[in-house]
Image 1: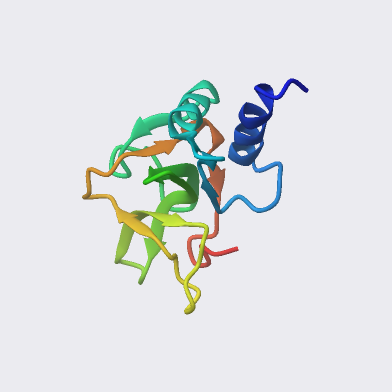
Image 2: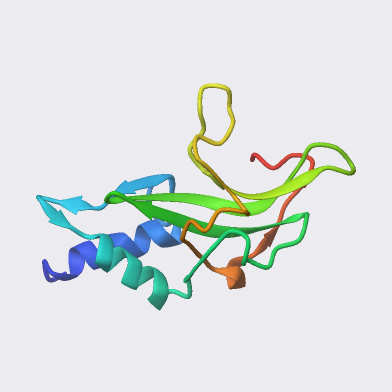
Length: 132
């Protein structure tokens, strides 16, 4: 593969979850910032720049999404977190976990933080067990 295609191929493989674990990716290659390349690749693969609140997702579903900041791409899901039968909240939760097993990063639906989400890749989930 030509050397100029290697970073692009690696970015695409990470986005699609085809290499290692899709948790976080530092977008620096020998001092070269690949953030713009990563965001363009997301758009090409059907991800859209949006907010958590704007993503169409129902309880029992989750949508893959990336949060890109300071040269780091963090993968996670937009979904409804259930506390009780009558209390839920919509959020983006990172795939990365903290020491307690909770999402290391969270973005609530009321924030205008930009994420890249792909609603066409929405999948079912167990609303009572969102991790796993």
